[in-house]
Length: 327
Image 1 (cartoon, rainbow, N blue to C red):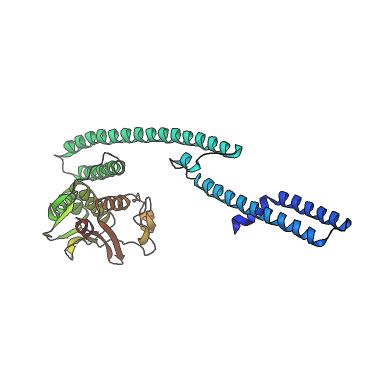
Image 2: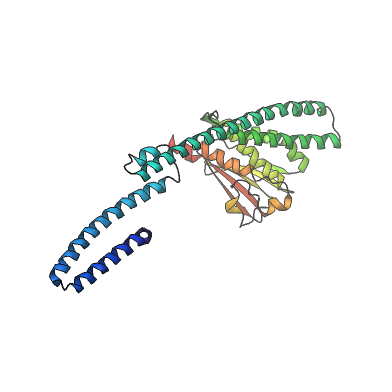
């Protein structure tokens, strides 16, 4: 209906000219006192002819309108969609779209090259920064005082941020390969626990963990990163109490802390990129990337991840059933 109204509006000039011509003919017929039957018959024939042409033109314009709507997305086969051109306007549209398509290809190629140049640079940077981090760890290895412990904690956080950057860079990389195999969930979890052992001791947080005795189909490297991110958040926002790791219903790995929790309003959005929530903003430690990366990685691995929180703390659940069911 909107298109029909616009169609008549765009052709109001032609319609006005036709109306004026009809009025002139009626006046002439009236002045010459021609028979009414002849006048009516002539007007009927003209009306049928005009209606037929109008319907044909309206359908033709509607088809062109639908094609032009598709131009907004400029798909790769846009010139095939336009088809052959029969009028000057059609040829102009064809040439315009051809130019736009060439321009779009140039922009996409330039953007693609810049993106991969940036990825290559930061990937190299990440690997280079690991060398001085390892060197500083070795320097502090034989020292055990308050200053050295504080420096080791700071280095540990820097290393975490570097790993996060590397995971972020590799997330959409075409070279990212996921190696799926059956792994002992205990082995993956214990690797992460061992890495954070010093943090548990320093912060005085109690670890509650019993072997889960389960095997899961996953990528060990990426799943280890996910568990480490969840543990990092748990320790970051838990000032006293414990972090519990357990298996629920033989399929859900649960990591529960007794920290400050997540507000009800923030809970639905914690996996969004850059979203920190009220507690993250007030604590000024959240980047809003950790859980976003966990969600993206779990999606790529075929696992589910969800969060539950109340006044007693937060629970992150990783669902290993989804990928196993597809296997």
